[in-house]
Image (tube, rainbow, N blue to C red; front, top):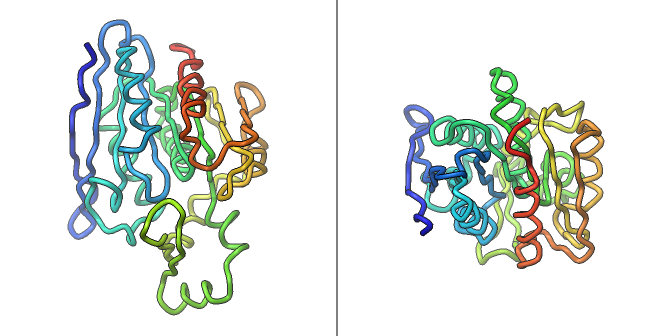
Length: 266
């Protein structure tokens, strides 16, 4: 019988910057102890209760594989203000959750912005001499450098004025009733976290899954990412009618298969 995930919480940051981060984790059991764990990294304004995150956790439970999902600050069940969020801030929380709740090799599964966070995590872990902790990456509609590469060129004059005057602008989103909020701090911090400017050494297999009907992250962005990854052990799956969420049953099946394809050992 598969056990339910255990709710966890950790505090990241000090003083006024402290924020509680909510997480759900499964410990490895049985033969699953020999498999790399799975860490879910969600997208901008998504949370760990989404269908892809739940499916990954459930599949891990069936296999006895360790699994971790959590909410960035300002998202879902975690504390903190969303408008204070930046890539650096959410990266700090992701590394803290990784350090606190996982052990041994892990597969990072990053969706949209979570793909950017995953790549930055690999860079930081390799700097720490812990690159072997990454067994592989599965990147779903990955959006590395999206503030600079995808958003800045499309900003309207009114949005640029709002960023300068108010420090943020809002825009409607088809994914929920509340508008998306993009802050000047997010754009400025995004430049400090660029990954599409040199070779991204992962030391592990990478599988990118990208919809060609994605209105938010064009499939050409996935091709650009591939140019920055070593040629070996990189797989790109293009789904002609796939959207940005890639949450249909057949999309989730592809994601689960990509995770299972990553070997237990190097």
